[in-house]
Every structure is written in structure tokens, then in C-alpha cells.
Image 1 (tube, each protein chain N blue to C red):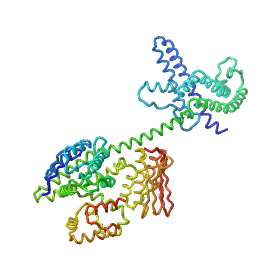
Image 2: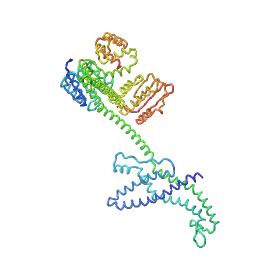
Image 3: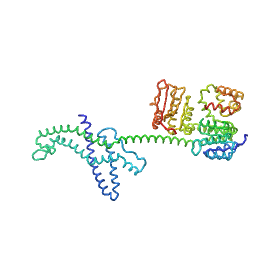
Image 4: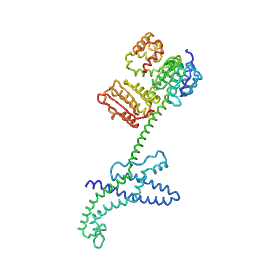
Length: 217
Length: 413
């Protein structure tokens, strides 16, 4: 059982807010504050010093991207604060802005659709809180679709591995997902980094960032 | 000559005759309104009546503009009046009383009631009355009741034999034929005077055009606002509920007994599928990124979703919402067309802002032959750009490549 997290939650829809509190509580976490707008989010973070912030993108008063703006401001003030942004949009611009804060660790950008897969959602929450990076598979898929050229060199299996890497999964998790050995995953990743002209690095977070930075470019 | 007789004369007669009838009744109305109004002015009731008399030019003008088509076939003259900016009788009356068109109409109404219709009657009678009486001489002679067996034609000539009567008829026919042309000319001059006073002036015509342009822009803006409202409603309503449903299904699956879990899983998959479809639908209605980040990111997003790989070269500031969305939807339509019809391998989007003009170009390496006249999508986009004074051009020779470019003059936001 992973450690219980102190979480500040910001979501303007009461329905979803209650639902999220339910899911997070079900997985043993403590939602210390559940708020409905960006201003209260900032205040709650100052008050509770949470282990993780979970926020919606679109929030009052403007109903544009206030939640994301607040998250970016919180990260700017405290780059070590883990933030998971929930969004209705497959939008790499939002994800990219988020990844550009701090050193890009301890952030997540997930589609709200993912919350329904409660176990995976709980995993993502824990991964971000632990300093990992999580980018929604749908966003990654879009990035992969766009940058066809350099990725054309990759085999289908390597592309699969790259997508899982971008989601912030460890070699072990990727091995389990693809039902191969961890050594095989390591070899695939070496090949991918080679083909994409990225020098191999030990740190798994840097690995994700390197791939994403390349895809963003 | 024959044409004049067959076509123009009946029109001229109808125009003048109806003018006489209307003018005579108008005279009565004007006299009553004017007299009663003036008499009642000391007790204030008269003032509205006088205002009514001034405004009587309006309906008379409208009627006369229609009646002009008797004299000269074709579309009716446009209304020279402006549309009031605000509702209400007071605003309407204020606008009407300050318009030049109203006073021109009043001038015409006065002329019509006091001068023109008697003149019309005189000309009609002069041309048709005298010659008609002369042509009818034999009949008059036959029915005469005078003791001498003679008749006075048109109160002028005395005749007493059928020989004279026939001569008179012949002279009458010649006179009639000679007068037909002047009759037609008079009717035309009469219509020209009416047109002069009742047609919109150059400035009024221009103002009308500006009004139409503005109302078209308002329509497009309303359409755009409605789009945003639908997007917002779906986003805040259906989408949130579906996420909540999916979440509850997810939680239920955690604790469900094995015999239920398969069915729950199926329901969950379905909910997630609907959620995905709804997300794409909402994005199609109006992508949030366009409002939040502007054209460069929205175009990059459109490129991401394109079936054909797209290279972007876009360097643009922010513009008014209407400009950004017109440009965005034009590019998206272009990309959709490229994906569907062009057979292209690649596409390029470039966007620049210079000299107060936004220019966006979408190019592909496809087979060309796109015809903007055939595709309703492109026509709709061109209309939308036209509202902003923008233009859409499609250059697509057979064999390719196709270049779609749009230009919108606009200030930077």
C-alpha cells in the first residue's frame, strides 16, 4: 500500500468534485481541500501544503484555462510541488506548458476520460506525487501521429515502447504491459534514443522529458 | 410605333389614370388633415395630426414606388428610409422626421395632391378625350337627339352628315396617333419626377449597403456566439455527467462480484467510447485552444489531427475572436478537403501578419483540380471571410498543386 497523500483538489463541477473525492478516498488518500475555483485553489495550497494538487483546466470565473494558469503559477512558486492537471482537451499546448515548469518532474496531464479507469488513475496520482511525469496516452498518440518523419525509422514495437515511456512508465511496467523481459525493453529504449539521436541517460524522468522535448520541437 | 401603341400606351394610361384616382383622394385627405390639424393646433391635439400629415409622405411614397412599375417595368425602387436602431414608436418617428427622404416624400405628396394629378387628368383627357370624341362622331350623330339632326363634336364642331362624321373619325384617328407619343413621353417624365423624389439618394443607398453589411456581420457574430454556447453547454453538462458516470462505473467494478464485472466492464467501455466521441464533437464545434492560445496553437492542433502530414510555418499575434475563428475554420476545412480529395502526401500551412493584413496559406502536393464553386464548404468559408472584408482564393490547376490562401485586414489584439 503506497503512502496516503494529502491532496488539494480543484474542480468546478460539484458532481465531478464529489466523485473525485470518492475515488481518491477509496485509494486511501486524504483530500484536505476540495475547491471550485482557481483563487481558492491557490489559497488552499498555501494553507495545507499538500503532497499533490489535482486541478481542472477550465474553471471560474472566466471558464477558460484558469485552472491551468493557477497550476503553472503554483509550480513557478514551488517547482517541487507535484501537480496533476485534468483536462477535457487532447491538447499538447497545455501539456507542454505544464512540462516546461520546474524541471518537468512531478507533473501530470490527464484527460478526464481517464478518471473512470480508477486503478490507472490512482496509479497516475501516485506516480506524479512521487515526482514522476505522466502525459495522457491520447496526447502522446497525437504527438506521435504528427511527427511522422523522424519516427518513421522506428519499428511498431519501438513506437509502442516510446508511447509507454512518454506516459512515465518504468522499464519494469513497460515489460509487464508488453509481456516481454525488462532487458528487451532496455534494448528497445536504447534503439529508440539512438534513432532519435538522443544520448542515452540513466534517469527515467529525463528520458521522458527528452522524448517529449523532441516531440514538441 | 406599333410597339409604343401595344406596350407603352396601355402602361402610360394605366399609370396616369391610377394617378388621377389616387391623387384626387389624396387631395381630400391632405385638406382634411391639414385643416383639422391647423385648427386644433391651439389645443395641442393638432400637433400630432400635423406630424401625421408630414409622415403621410411615407405610405404615399411607398405606394408610388410600387406604382412606378406601371410606367417602367422592373424591380420596385428600394426604400430610402433607414431602419430604426431601437424599437418603439417614438424612436421610429424621431428617425423619420429627421430623414431627408421623409421630406422629399412629403414634397412629392404635396405636389401629387395639388399639382400633378390635375395635370395628369388634363393630359389624359387632352390626348384621349378630344380624339376619342372625334372618332366616336358617327355614333354621336346616330344617337343625337337634336331637332336639326346635327351634333356638336367635343363641343367644338357642328356636323350634320355622315360624310362629315366619317371625316371627323379619320381626323380623330390621326390626332390620336399623333398624341400617343406625347402621352407616353409625358407619363415617362411624370415617372422620372416621382423617381427623383422617391428613390434613395446615393448617400442613402450607400447607407443601406452599410446597414446590410453590418447586419450580416451581426448574424455571423450571433452564429459564432451560439457555437460557443453549445460548446459550453455540452462541456459543462453532458461531458461532466459522462465523466462522473464513468467514474462510478469504475468504482463499482472494483467492488463488484465476478458475475457482474463483465457486464460492468462492457458498460464502462461504452461510456468511455461515448465520452471520446463527445470530446471530439465539442472540439469540432469550437476548440478551446483557439480561445486560450490563439491561431498558432490552434493551427498546430488542426495539423496534428490532419490525415495528411502537415508542416507548419506560423508566426502570428492574437486577433479578434471573429478573425481567429474564421481563419481557423477555413484552414480546417482546407485540411479536411486535402485529406478527402487531393491525394496529397504532404501539406504546408504558413501564416503571417504584415501591413495590417493576416495572410494564411494552405498548400498541398496533391492532384489539384479543386473547384471552389462546387464545394459548398469553401463557399461558406468565403462568405464568412467576406463579412470581415477578407478574401479566400483557391488556386488549383489540374495536376496540382492546390494553394488555398486567405487574407483578412484586421488590427492586432
